[in-house]
Amino acid sequence: MRFGLLTIGDELLNGKVLDRNKLHIGRLVDSLGGQLHLQLSTPDDLERMEEAFHFAMKRCDILFMTGGLGGTHDDLSFALVERVFQGAQKEEIENQVGIASGWILKKEQKTLILLPGPPRENLPMIRQLHDQLQTEVIHERFYILVGIGEVQMETKLREHLGEERTMYFATYVADGYTTLRVRTKDRKLCEQICEEVETLFQKEIYATGDETIPLRLFSMLKDRGLTLALVESASCGGIASLLSEVSGVSEVLYGSYVVYSPQAKQQMLDMAPELLIDDCVGEEITRELARAAKRKSGSSLALALTGYSEHPDPQKHGQVFVSMCSNEREECLHFRLRQNREANLVRMCYRALAFAIDFLLNEEE
Image (cartoon, rainbow, N blue to C red; front, side, top):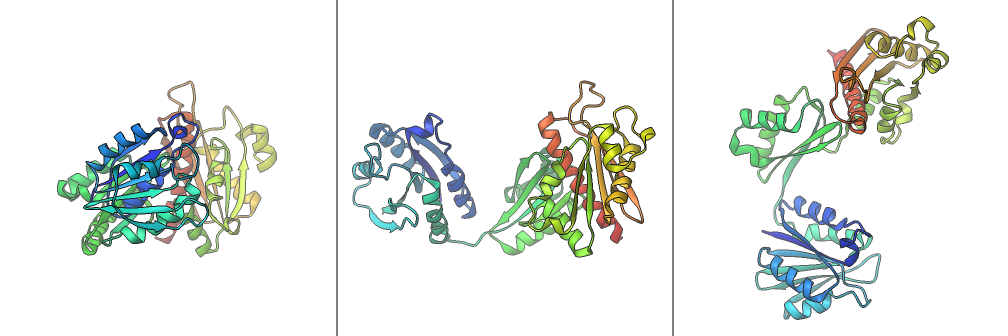
């Protein structure tokens, strides 16, 4: 089944309105196990709309068209349908939050789905369409990986699982982590591939399914009855910000000491002045910061991070140190990031959360 999307509106082409319908329709088609073969946008001009419609319909079995369904002079979608899709069977889709209804029109082997432009109106319709258009069950699982790039991941998948299975994988890159999706129409095959993926990337997988890395760390801390204090120098509160996405995080998170200057480290964490030399970056000072935060906060665990999100010295740029300690043990991690300041800030925070998860896993062994 070939899907297409035609979005209507001058405001989409002149940049005054962000076209979120591409995102929402794309997700709908993906959830159905399909793929958008094309996406087109046209101005509120009947001739241009007709050209785009014919171009899309020749290449698609199901065409979504958003916009142009209101009552103003530039709402021309119904006029277009009367020109180019006469005699179609019609089924109304109720608009739960607005005036303009959606429509499913079928003619011969083609289906045209009309939706109003505003996402707040068409999103409830899109959810309804999922149930109406779903013809087969899709089995899928998501993995969030840290510390491995997209190219390296795909290379390992091809080498270990075979070229013929690459059709079942998709990767999505974000600053700080990479998402790997496994999807098939065969449940047993999906389970088999997932087992192989989990074996292949057991050191890089930090969350699965709908779980996120912050949520996994929160769950691990809560299940163990532990609390965590943070010391953030280079990350400027970014680790705490990621954890704040989790509802109820105050049950496990004591807080974050954001300490950049030596004075802040001394006053907030009672650090000895002789430790606060040079730029306060490195393994030993990071260890001392973690110890001080644990001692000062009374938390079960403390995690500290120092480093450079950017630096004019190429040898220092992207250098990061993370240390974590409990009553029984402490560990330290050193790594190098090579992106710009903005990307490095996000990546160091995710690496720190992944390091904390590993710390807790190692305590169980």
